Image (cartoon, rainbow, N blue to C red; front, side, top):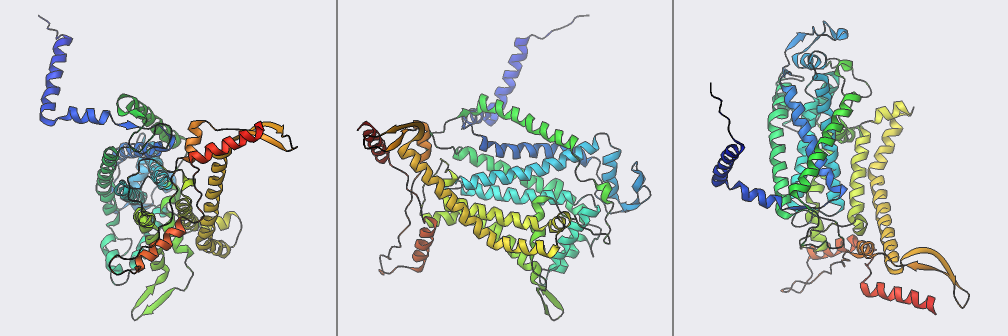
Length: 540
């Protein structure tokens, strides 16, 4: 018998021919080279988007595993699995298969918890990433479209989380769906028909789990992947933003190329994030559906809340005062539900239009690739802090019953305080945050002009004691003064009529409000003169 061995050279030539064949038909080598030369800056704040991406990968891996064992059916059956307390109890096939995954499928409980923890981390990191983009001004031209795509991703992620959270048909998810059913039915005219179509009849119907399952594993993931691809593509096209510093300009990005440095770091970080998710899924229990039991409309108690990112909708419903219903013939118009719809709509729409609103107010139409320090845009930072307070207060409203029971307080007192803080607290947060940013700006200006304290005190000839101040290092000084001080826009008359239009007056008013109490960045001449005067006085 003759044994034939293929040489490494021959294998290499076959591989080269195959790669050449593919490249001639796709030109993929040029795209890889172009992408590999892209520069990505190193800063911890940019890793928030990576955490979201890697969490999504963990969701896809664990979700694929769970699809092989989950039965998305509302068919009634009697549970006969290994969990003894529920044995012999009637429930839907969806609930029974969830219990089977938890107790009968090897590794099933771990994968369930990985899926849930990864979903929470995905939404949280997405929100943190969007907050970083907002507070640093990374949404400005030419990245307004990417900001909108990011917000759409956030909304899809919340819908994806809620649809998955509702699939087990346990008591907790059933109560959440009941709240959604009530909100849909409150829509005038078409609400009842929409509820019948969604649930397949009167609540709870027999279609909701199957329809949510289709959304959860096909439609919403496909939308997430598509918008993630667009988000990444636009990031490559526009190049990455970066913090100002020595050598960092609007045209030049300072950092590491994708290949091989950034790719190696990103791969290592991917394993760290996924390992962390598996660690917390191993050590910390989440969503124990066997404790809640199958859905039954009768037992509703304190502690019935959706996952935290959806809590702002539930909280908005709880914070509306009672008695906001108006009977109209055979219909009842419920402002107690329509007003929360309006509040949530204003909250989300405000995020979508903000980049264009700021561009209109400031008149800034230039491209921006350098980020702002949040303190150097005090009004924007204050608005963002007020937005977060508004969201967090509604979110806290969803836990008003738990707050009352844990701290032995009256439910009415908790609700009344949250109602007050939702509006007045947001104004207080805005004012405090803006004054804080202005104080930090003044401190930065003082450091740039006079330097830092050296701890050395001398006595001047006329008897005054004065501390010798040391000028900042060039890099540190650059960070303090490298921002532009915009002036408010002045309303200009129309060239044809000579009159100032109402739109121009509104723009000028908003611009004065946006730049009120601004602190000018010191110029190089001012810094040099301040240092010279200080040292001259000491020498004299």
